[in-house]
Image 1 (cartoon, rainbow, N blue to C red):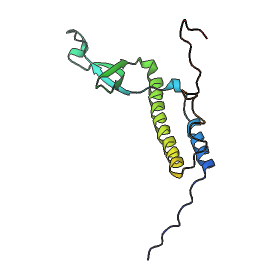
Image 2: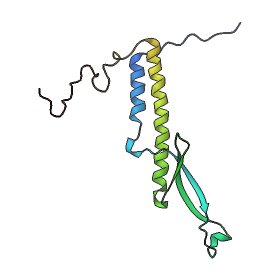
Image 3: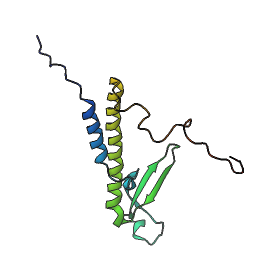
Image 4: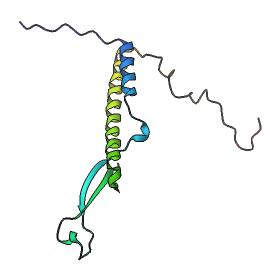
Length: 141
């Protein structure tokens, strides 16, 4: 007969909130985020007298990004900016990991029906029904 471990106690809502806050606090500034991959290439300039015509090409570093429509964009990165660009790309990955961690915590709240605040009360602004109506140019009130 196998011993089964006792069922684990669910994590309290306060601990889930604290975990979610810690994830958010570890994130770098949003201004230091860059989506893409750093690519190292050698290119040939096309001049018949250049060393790249017969030897190694000219080294080039670029950020490459593929968009939803299948188009790819490459942006050349100056050598002095490489460390910063590497860090910004790593920051982008950290944001995606944080989004996944926070989503998992929020799913736990949803599964338990123990939302820390009533849904919508901690939202970003008011609903359309309670928002003041904008005046049209030339209208009287």
